[in-house]
Amino acid sequence: MGCFCSTSKNVKTPGYEDPTILASETPFTVSEVEALYELFLKLSNSIIEDGLIHKEEFQLALFRNENEKNLFADRIFDLFDVKRNGVIEFGEFVRSLGVFHPNAALEDKIAFAFRLYDLRQTGYIEREELKEMVLALLHESDLVLSDDMIEAIVDKTFKDADTKDDGRIDQDEWKAFVSQHPSLIKNMTLPYLKDITLAFPSFIARTEVEDSERGLTGEEQIVTTV
Image (tube, rainbow, N blue to C red; front, top):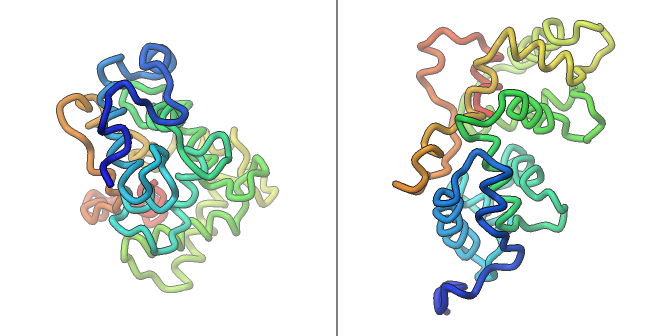
């Protein structure tokens, strides 16, 4: 079978939106949105040729593996899937990716990262949620830590971030915590999105080993992988 939409440029994917509108709502220019559409076509037809990004295709794009269960990939997919219909449409893809643009507002990046950790969507990051994400990120980065060290990372994060001492981190506490530790959201900015018209990104999210060489603390090394 040929690639979906390959027979005619006039045939658009389900959920296609006008690049002009998307450019007005994101940091991307019209030409960049058009380039993203070409990338979207590649991703959305990599396994199922229907012009929509399914979770397996998203997993493959992020980690080169569409079968391995990964909480981190699942959370990113869920946040991109704004309509909650199990697939990512073109408009959702561009708007969500816009948060990672170097010119996107810092508040948007902080809010996206908060939602990433708010696994149960309660409006708070609870200790168990943080631990689940830490374990998922450790698994993805192949970084092995003892149970005691993991507990120490989670405990220290809550001690520093949970200023109200109520056992959960709200959005204001998270924002204040990130302002003190900006490296925690460094991967919320993807520099190559400014050059999207020149080359397609690889979309491989992996922990940078050299982070430890730059002197980041234990919890910063882990949360930075977001």
